[in-house]
Length: 170
Image (tube, rainbow, N blue to C red; front, top):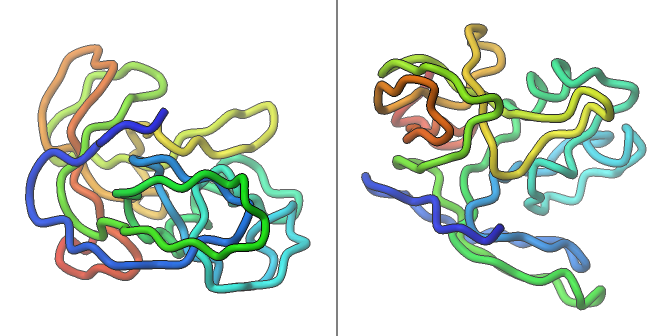
């Protein structure tokens, strides 16, 4: 997709390492692999690298459990992209830890300012999607809140609240 999702507000960028062989596109929602078993159906060792949401999959978890789990490790939005072609080089990217971003909604919804949003995914495989969000009512799933009101919206502006950036804490 490689879409610049940044809209407004200071992004508070940080530089993080991405594991070799991992492709990151600009606009991907990212998490920090800081605890064992967050990837590969719960058979991974923590390496403290950043990964796009699609890599987050704990052992036997349902989509709802993956959505709740990723909140605790949510770093922010990738401001750069790297191709995962080279399997030997650790790459560095910028991640926006705060700010306003525009994301596709799955499914299209009516949203109001301050409604919560969370990760979106596929129910058949319990996989999270890197660049789509959905309206949620449960704060345990919330990655931030909507910054605008829209009816039957396909996209919407959101304010992110990462696990590591405290300014917009939910």
